[in-house]
Amino acid sequence: MARGFTLIELLVTLAVLVIIITVGVPGFQNLTNQNRAAGTANELLTALQAARSAAVTRSRDIEICASDTTGAEDPDNISCSNSSDWSTGWVVRDPGVGETLRVRGPVRGGVAIRGPDGPVTFTNAGVVEGSTSLSRYDFDVDVNSGRAERCVDFGIGGRAEVLEGDC
Image (cartoon, rainbow, N blue to C red; front, side, top):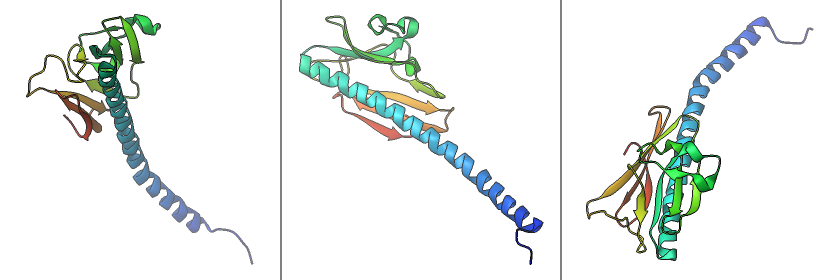
């Protein structure tokens, strides 16, 4: 008696494998996009919390802003841009003494971040400078043109949170 697989058995196995791959790969790409959006939003949230904490700890104004990538080679020479495009990265700094506290370089992998124009400044009380009782600040984190989105939202009190979806 001969052992092995028939041609029909091999073709059926191959067809099942193709169906599984066809269904699984797009789902995996969606999962990857969701993770990329969540990771980037959480990283921005951490930077905002670090800026607020530093403002309270140092009893000075601390600002976080979108970075101007022209000085990207030297972290001490990175300056703020007045753009709403935070995909270039961000800088947490103490403008009173000119000290850079934290730098995040440009984000990659199809991630786009839109936020406030210019710096967001936390006062020594941990609140956002120049805001009113109705002020809210949003950062829209978008991966691959809307396939995965997160919103980093915070109010004048400085408390921030990451929300799923568009801002």
